[in-house]
Image 1 (cartoon, rainbow, N blue to C red):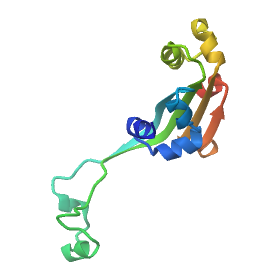
Image 2 (image 1 turned 45 degrees about the vertical axis):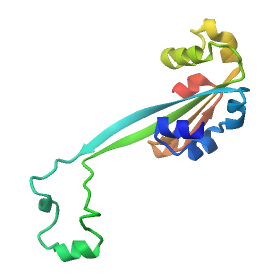
Image 3 (image 1 turned 135 degrees about the vertical axis):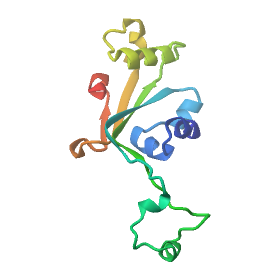
Length: 156
């Protein structure tokens, strides 16, 4: 379901639905089987150490009244983000019309081994499947790229 995908991948399911084109009706009717995998490619992380005193985060010229005017209170204290990871997330949708009980095993083998050609055991399932990937973030020339059909292209 949409809520399961949103929860499992920690993402807005409507965004993925629009990008990956998941037919939730066909899935719930048993006409299709879908598996979505998320990969994070972290290029670098920026970290900051917390100071001994929270007041050390502010310049000496900043007053309590000024912070209060800007909405800081006991109910809405200031927040410091101490770690930020920069990179991209790749969502891969594997979809099939196959009725085989081995679909999940076939998709897991594909994600693990990374090649359709080395998994002859599941050839019938792969022949009846489609693969779509959405790349969010990263290099601006690759930003929000959508790749379909060729799983080897999805992997690269």
